[in-house]
Picture 1 (cartoon, rainbow, N blue to C red):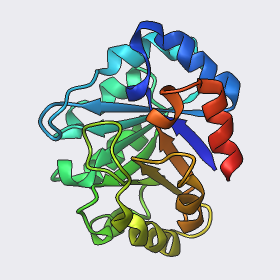
Picture 2 (cartoon, rainbow, N blue to C red):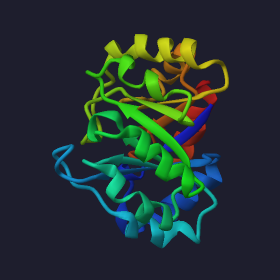
Picture 3 (spheres, rainbow, N blue to C red):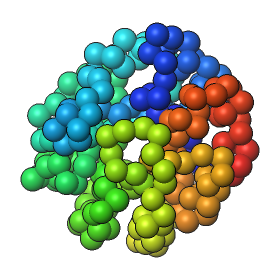
Picture 4 (cartoon, rainbow, N blue to C red):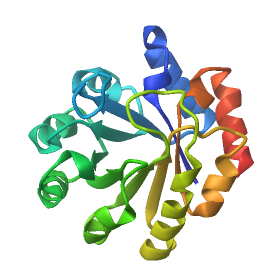
Length: 211
């Protein structure tokens, strides 16, 4: 299982220190939520923020675009240091173009679906992407409660995609439910509040030990 702590929940006054701490504690990915205030109501940060920490971190930068027409900015996010770019199937009229652009730039491509979106929406792209991200909260805000209704989607995707395919789940995951989400078939777990709202090292260790 891969743990991808969400930078959205970090303390930005000491961002570099906290990212170094999650890496030292055993996390290997960093989840970077980019919000445009259109696709989701909130606005987070652009590529320049994580570009500033790229040279100081060996973490895999897991960039999650919650933006409308993501194809407009893929090159910018790759240039800033993304290792994988995940876009929402609901946010673009041409998912294949997004996937092609990401792969042409030498990066991994992921596709995401919101809690209310059927797995059927991403099935045409499963053989083209490197990961599917299942949102287990409504995108745009941290600290929400896990939506249990997404569980069948995780299981279905695991059946469709095989044992080794990356299935990421994002939203409301903590020590009390991480094992059940992994048991459903997830192998990449995003955790924000569950990592950064307490002792970071202990939180990372605790989440990893649960599975």
